[in-house]
Image (tube, rainbow, N blue to C red; front, side, top):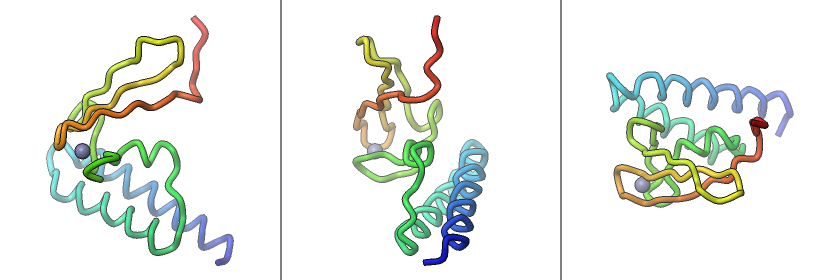
Length: 105
Ligand SMILES: [Zn+2]
C-alpha cells in the first residue's frame, strides 16, 4: 500500500472518531455509525488505530464508548500511572497504562 493512502485512512479514522465523540451526547446512533465506519476502515486497509482511538472501543463488547458518558474512568491507585475504564454496556473493566502525558507534580 502507498504511504500516502495510509495517511489518508489514518486521517479519515481520526475525523470519524472525533465526530463520533462530539455526536455521542445528542446523536448516539450517528456516533455509533461513524465509529463503526472507522473500525471498518482500519480492518479493510489494515491500518492500526492509534492508542487514543483504540481507547474509545470496549475491549470486550467492542462498542464505541465515550469516557464520562458511556464509560466510567477512574484513576488507578498503584504507582503505575493507569486508569480504569468501565464500559457501561457490558460492565467490563479494563486498565490502561498511561505512557504519555505524565505530569510531574
Ligand atoms: Zn463493553
